[in-house]
Length: 286
Length: 125
Image (cartoon, rainbow over all chains, first blue to last red; front, side, top):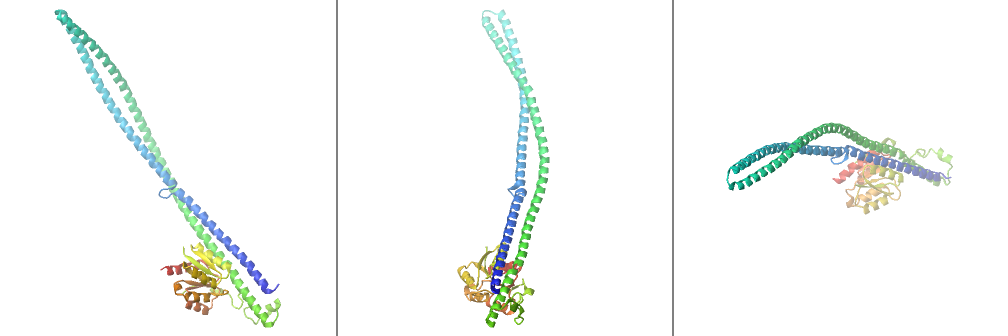
């Protein structure tokens, strides 16, 4: 195989391999970025933003429970007031019932007096007797109705304290629940604070990971660039060899090329121009 | 996203420069020699910067920059040379033709990106 064919082949192979290596590096960087983005998304879900995430959800739940709790306590307070007023109403009913009993008794006495007077009077008195009878009957009915009212009042009187007692017990239960909820909320706050801290650290680590991978990829790129520098050197060697062939009129043996000392720099990668190793990587802005 | 034209006859160099610039958030298009580079610049006014090799077939980098900068519409287009050459005479010729920078291969990606960002800002302002 001729020297320049070999040079071309080496350049093509090395270029192919370098391109494949750089493509692999690019895929690594993209995967690292993708993983970091996923990590940040998960951290945000746990640590929460202003409206989303577990922390925000727990905070809304806590507010909901507090609001429900406050509403229930208010209802219980009103129920207690109603119970107290009911007791007062029952007492009023008792007084009214006592007064009705007194009136009914007075009616019976009056009816008895009327009957007695009627017995001493003339025929006129028979009418009064009927009136007295009716009065007595009404009096008995009033007494019966009053007795019923008294029974109802007694029943109500027995019920109201029970209702009030139940309201009191419910209120105490809600208060106890409030205490437990408050303690639980404090625990949740501590846990979410720890979660938020972990989320922040996770996001920082994701960012650092991406920076680290990008930095490593830059390092790889700087090493892969040797291929281009070497390829240029080999092409210059190839060109110099072609010139030599034209000069001597025949294709030289490899040994002849290696022996040549008159053409300076031919043995160095870079042909007649050595790679500017001292200034490699320098950036000059004008 | 700012668009940068990379002109180099080596596919691996175009790929490596492109990779470094894309990671830094730039859009990258490529040309394989000076003639392709001139065509690309004429066809796309959204190119905000050019990174160009010196030794290329058909039209080398110095010839390309002299042709591009010869047009008034490209007066503000920053062009940075990226090459293994380090001869002062070549650097002076590029500077005289209007180049804004010179990077010696093999380049360090972070330094290249920093220089590009600086020149792109200068063009933007």
